[in-house]
Length: 471
Image: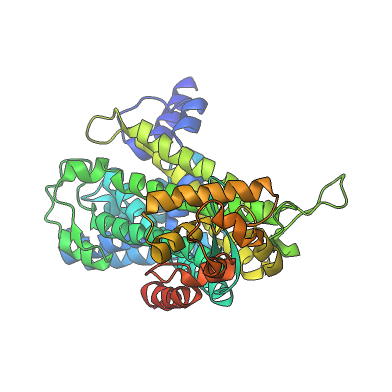
């Protein structure tokens, strides 16, 4: 009786590993070894890659045409079962690959075992993961483009809306709100270009590399490359199964993008505060307090800001996992997926939240304009005027302007509120024309350099941004 139980366990253990082991793994081994709880989201990629592999095997007469068709039809049936939620994922089968293969055997019998000819789970998972990341990049690029579009639309409505520009979070110079928004359009444009570059680099086909040494079967790697829309097959089978550079790169880009999202979210939080009151988020993206009835919290922005931490953490995690791994495949590489999937999910929802916030935001133009007049934001315009009109060297004009600001502070007034005599007490050449450059409106209009904040230049850059990013 005991002997029969052991035999039963032997059969269970050999479903994946063949006849090498005498007993099934312990429960804790099954738990730590299994990845099906998270890698089941690779089912789409695993099935289309398996179909491509089966087609190639039949084409090369490694399996018969009939066997190939039987395998492909079985895989398509499994795809429908998973999509409809009727597939039973089993922890003891470890991963998505073995779950699908086991189900295929239930459907078509022993012919299912021929699907794994000339491949390993090592090249299989590398192929699946590249396909998944390629699709993830396409999705994120589309959403970032939409975010850029919403920012551009808002910028176009606010080309003449004046606000304070900041350095060190202190009033620096007056700018237009449209100009400020276009800064984020540029950031997200760089993120998109990095994603596109990453997609180009990862788009090579590992399938056919097998465990690490390639295969003795007469496979056609160009065939699966074309079928799966890769640009070329990988050129080194060892690198093909052990490389996760594309995961690092994707997570690095995700981390950079999340930082840009976080910076935008931080400004939304600041601008929504009572101290600033520059904008108001709609009810859709705000929450209240359980105890303070007056509260209106920009929680969508705060959550988007906070999620950057977990995305950066996922990048750090995969870097540490990979730093000491010898070639080629090690089970450590199973740790590449949870952080990858979580980062994509987190970044996706953060971008969507920002799209929503930007689309529904209300701008307090009066408050922005009023704030731009404080902090002596036209002091640089004064210094520039001294250079252009009075031919004073800039370093000297900078000193003069600083002394005039100090005098205004002493008199508790704005620069344009100082009488002309006060200006002359510091520099006798100053005349009435100085007052033309001290208004925030004239300051903004004067910044006509390429990429500057003048409304006319902002309109030009909006047109430029539409051409570069939205077409």
